[in-house]
Length: 238
Image (cartoon, rainbow, N blue to C red):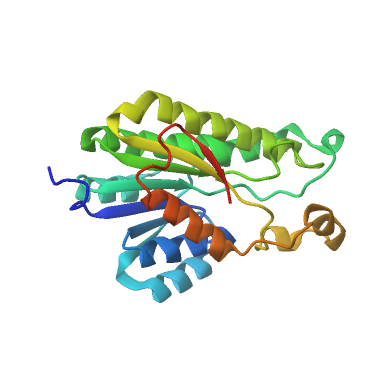
């Protein structure tokens, strides 16, 4: 088996057609990774990103919340079984912050399904490969709105907190197999998701200005490339 420096680097990024997801695909592609971007709905954005980044990026339409048909990804993983894999669990369900007493159970379920169950399903496909390869990375995208939860973010923070626990568990259980796991917690970003929120809500969340998704994506890629990152399931404010 080739050593880590010789392996093909493959980044599997969920939520690839969202604001941060697009920048992650660009950044990891620029950093020498073959990028597999998973998305669900925005075919136009996927086609545009595919045309922009070319052969080094593959956009796959995949519902990560359901068992469904994972054949496309499974075939890709088989073809690249000896690669050095990085998972970036970036996908999150769309939501609008609201007071806890107005939240419906279905809103918790949807956020949990995408953020946590989606990551678990993807790990089910990739973790055995990482174990065989004796290495890999799992990166989860959290939020500075988690601790303490910002007003209106109860459901979102609950889902992200569960993802944070999952991230730490991966590190504890598989760190000795050279599988690194860590999370990043960006501040408020201007993305297609947050563009739907009211100006009043946005103003209440931003004190020092919004972060650029391109900057956050670059920091995530830099952290993924750092061999000393993610040895203990750390969370990195970005």
